[in-house]
Length: 231
Image 1 (tube, rainbow, N blue to C red):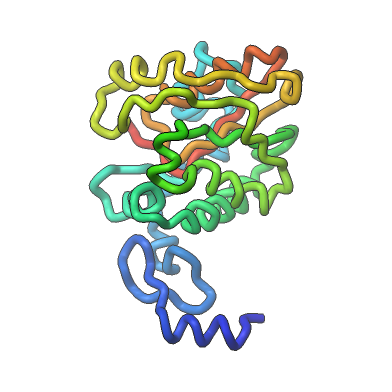
Image 2: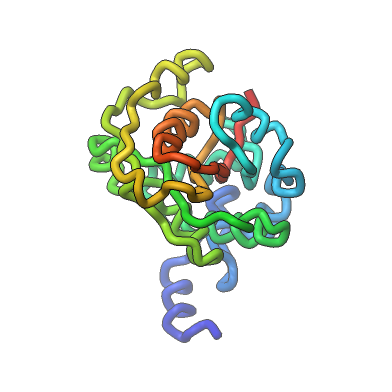
């Protein structure tokens, strides 16, 4: 049931679709039904072990499964989802899209055997600037649906080397090398972890983070993101 106050607030301050800008209905969140229908979904969860995203991590980390909700193109309308989440102070988008993605991946048993969620951390400077970690907000949405705990104090990002957006493949790899630090290996030793990021492009950030996680010993890694950018 949708409360009277929710309906009144929606009337006074209409919510807009983050993609097309049209007014959302009372039952819609973040995306209108039309934009949700036309979201360029990857379908990676139907082949989580050998899709192009999973293959990106082969030989780099002990990857189990990988999936992303949609294909991210920087100048497409759907890029507004990521842009508004990261740069326009809309952390609620992360939780909403995280829930939506988790519901869809749950249908294929993607989360089977996974024991905890690790959101890719931001450096303290960047988190102070932004006010939140977008990967953490996505992780919250995933946790709401799956019931998986979030471990957000296991690994730390010590250095902020600037945005990855304008960097090429090799620059991205060099930019994140050795910037993460494992803080609590004991709590994750022998566990199957879901590492969550907003967008995976070259996988450099995820790989750098996971290389610290595997130091704990006998760790399995699965990766989930909202967007996947074809290189």
